[in-house]
Length: 362
Image: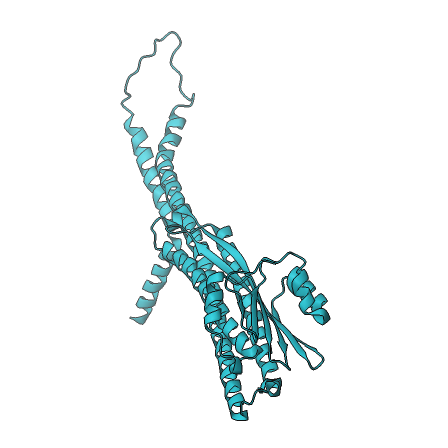
């Protein structure tokens, strides 16, 4: 076992960092012989999150608390990000007779470990729940950083939509759904953390008589410590709940962005399709203009007339060329009018109905 340089041993309190202990946790398992299997299977192998208290007769209380935190680290100037998991566990063995504590921390950042040490209360005010409240307060800081890092990534996505090229460049939908998965995980861990704190509060209330000092402290002093611990635990529960609501809000905001991105892309493609339709309409009108002339010229080009045999054909303009135009032009205009009447038929019908109604009123 490798303990860090911030371990503490002050007689009544022994604090160790056992993060680097071997995988089997041989040393730590020896500290909880009655609960070894439960701790090993649930918190070592399965990496579960939660709270547990066990009693070894009337001499020792064994308890542990485990939190999981998902950290998102964004990339400056980019929507890319990385993520990592953090699992922090505290194990406490409390001797009811000697009032001694053995505290083991797993996965606790070293800088926060030193802060944890500085916040420990004096021996007469110390019990597992004062230590738990300090531990939770430090973990709460990590949850706060985690949620706000998620918020920063979501905010980048919200601001990127203001870019003129955002709709034309497209959106990375797999990345958006991955971020939604991370937020769901964050909400899940916060929900379980709240349940763990509630379980701690319940156990604290049930066991308050066990925490009265046997070293001569008055009942009033013990009750004062108890009330302070209770209020601190309730405050931590409220703050975790607020962070959970923030996580739920981030999930709703991200879903809103996903829906908006889908609608923007649909609108963009719809506008492109409409532009293509306008081009095809112009082509159709141009074809419609030239169609009557082609029709008439094809009639005149048919072999209804033939030159006498032996004559040399020359290109001349016939005196009857006007006949082509006299037929083609009215036919073209009539064709366009028929097309316009069909295309705007509903408008014409509405106009006729309106005029008919006005004449009836007069």
